[in-house]
Every structure is written in structure tokens, then in C-alpha cells.
Image 1 (cartoon, rainbow, N blue to C red):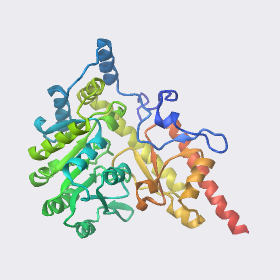
Image 2 (cartoon, rainbow, N blue to C red; image 1 turned 90 degrees about the vertical axis):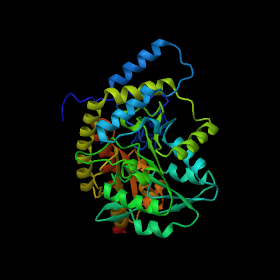
Image 3 (spheres, one colour; image 1 turned 180 degrees about the vertical axis):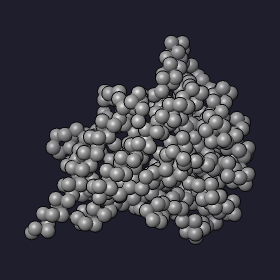
Length: 404
């Protein structure tokens, strides 16, 4: 690792009204827990983003702002350079974040009672986005083959009915870390086309990938699937600007795009933050080497996590994308008789470690915990130590039972 990396020291975030650090409680022992749950990074934003924001703030006027051609071109150019993907600027729609875009697609492109399919264990706001809006949730669970998650496309065919209208795709997948191959997406697309389904593809983690792993945009799979796809991108995860929300929603079909835009307007989602637009442009225009360094840092972090977690009896398949690890506590739970709640208590109370519980991502996440590794090596060292303390506490419970 380059000793000059900007990722080994992180700003003190406590006191900035941040969910991750200011929202954390103390555990029953009075110890501050280490928050490794919510998916934002502890790193400072890249310098070009900060510089652009300072210039905009110095202007001192923050009136109504729109997504300009230059804003659109920054995203188009990024996709061309990073993914060899040619995006027509005319197909882009601004939204104030990926989840507002997903919810708008559900509301505007389906009717109450229509079925929307998800692939759990999956990003938990998907569940609420469907149910809160009166649509019917249908699950097409991922399956594990030799420890690696795959889509169960035969099962997907079996759950599609005349009321099925939409498929929600998480690509790259949160929390399991898969970056779907072009071949997998082609088979998925074939099903969507044959059954006349709309695909909403959450591609927010597209730029966070392990070395040698390629991302395939859903829109780029082929013209037939492009005509029925709403692809949601944002700079928030890549550049750690989630608090400055903006999303680039790619919708090649003009009729779908028009319906989506009308829904955004009806929900009041059309107004853009001037600071969000400035940050997005600066990130896409000037921060490519920063992202390369970031991904290299994550490669090293995950190498260590896979090794250290395995030594503790908590296997994890090295994720292909995202900065989120999917820790498998099922072997320890089976050996100790612990359940999900006992695992959570051991992590929180004994280890002082706050992770995302796997069961939040659907029943298929039972036995798992999601960890966010986007922090300094020093804090990551602390997290590994706390993970060991929690595992020791679970093991001690088993050993105590064996002696009785």
C-alpha cells in the first residue's frame, strides 16, 4: 500500500450530526460501540470536490438550480471512460437520490396491487418501497453455489404471473457483493423481455469493484432490454457525498422516461441542490485517480477481512464489488446454538461492534451480518479485534454449556 494514501487517516465525524457516529449508543458496559453498519465512508471527499464546493459557496447565492448540459456531460464522459458505455445525454433524468428514483419508478410505472420482484437478501429499502406504495412484493431469492451467490432464474420464471410488472435489480449487489456478469444479465434480460417486464436497476455501487472485475450496465446488455430499463446511478457511494444527493437516471425509452419525469414532478422531486450538482460534476470530471486508489485500498482491506474472519470461524466470500462484507455467522451459530439475536448481542455488548443485521435484508440473511470496511486501517484494526471478542463470547457460551 502506498504510504501516501489519503485513506489511512479520517476526519473526526462525531459532532457533525452524522448517522454513523452521532447516532451510536453505548452498550450495556458503557462502551462506545464502533459503527460499521451504514454504507457511507469515513474518508474525506476528494480535493477537487471540496475545491469546487468552496468556489460555489463563495458565490453566496443558492437559488433554484437545474441539471445543466455540463452536469449531464460529466456523467456521460465518466461512463465512457470507466465502462466503455455510451450514454445519450437526452436519456438522462435528474433525481435527488437513487431511492427516490426507485420509488418514483414503482409509483409511476406500476399500479396498486401489481407485483414487483426482488432478489433477497437485498438492500432493505427495496422492501418498503414496494409495500409502502401498495404493490405486491414477490421474492426471487439468490442461491449459494460453492459459497458464491447466483441468481435463480428458473425460480424467477416460476414466480412471474400476469400481475407481475417490474423487476428490481441490485447491480452490483448489496449486501452480497456480486457484480453480475454480462452472461448472467443477458439471461435475466431475456426473461424480462419475454414477460414484458420493466427493470429498475440500482447501479449505485458500479464504480466500487475489485481489481479485474468488470461492471456491465443493464442498459448496455442489448437494445430490447434497454427499452424497458430504468438504470439508477449516483456519485454518492463512489465519492462519499451521500449528504449531497443527486442521481443520474438513464431511461432510453422516451415513453417510460416521460412517465417517470411526470411522477418525479408530482412527488416534488424535481428540484436540484446547487451544491449537489457542483459536487457531482467535480467528482466525475476530476477524481478518476482518487477512485483508482480507493479501490486499491479496498482490495487490501478485503484481503485482510477474508483472512481474519476465516481464522475466527466466520467465513466470507471476497466481494466482487461494493465496500460491504457479508459475514457468515451460521457455522458459529450451529456450533454454539446461538441465534441471530444472540449473535447481535455478542457483537454489540461483548465486542462493542455495530453491524447491519443480515435479517434486515430478508429472511435469507438470517445468520449473516453486513460490515462496512470503508474506514481507516486503524479503525479497521479495532473492528477486527472487536469481532474477535464477540466470537470469543459466543464460543464461551458453548463451552460453558458443554461443562454443565
